[in-house]
Image 1 (cartoon, rainbow, N blue to C red):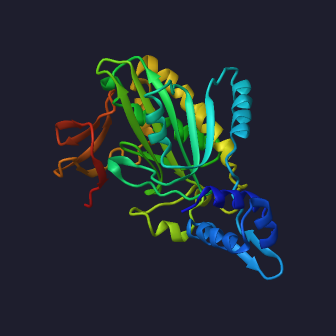
Image 2: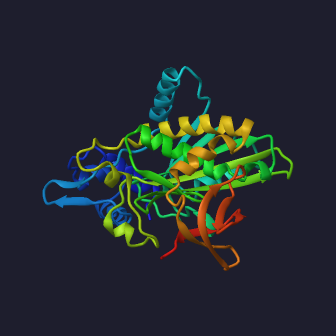
Length: 334
């Protein structure tokens, strides 16, 4: 597990150059033995280090650490280009239990509307249905965004789908082609998972409702980390290809936040209806025969006819159609 001390050392090594153990120890106020121990912990967190006698340590792939000032600057540039404003508060932390959990706690004390919180490392990142979200320091993009709606939970049933549209739009604009959506809230590329969305709500049945929108994306996942993930995965680096420019996570996060803000402003007025056609166009399973695993363990099969204006999945079985608000789909074998 990475600690604040670990991040202090990693930031010293972020230039990709060799640094001696003595210099690192002096800069962060540790003994050389402790420096060696902390760097071993960093390797356990998925970061590749090179050690060379007489020269010290260097990161083989130095992460572009997230920086709130840089993200804010990118957002300002995007606002100018779009002739709009992007009133978002952006915070970055090295380590946290979960960005979504933190915003859920904060909303009990203060407003989190338009507050974005990103983390390099989550000790208890969460996916859907209580699953753990695996992330790599410097190799993932995990963030949450608070957003307030005047309506209640029923109006927000399709929110995760609209968020998926926003995320894919932003990724396409940055050159990541072929990323599709999987109902209700996965992002996939050639049926390999590249990201996920988690929506949490707090409010009255009829509104207003404060939401916390959590997004996790695999940017650069080392092979060792993939072994710990229960489903087949890929990352943005693989999607971009070897000839692509290095991925700037600060710019990418700014683009994601800008697109999310635009989509959420529309959703607040019109709900999911304006996004239905685009979502269906981007759905990897549209028109496919699938098996749907329901929350109670039962399964149903049918052909994906699409989604309705509430975000419910519509399955067709001959002339009959049925809608479902939750569950997980897999391709049905012929």
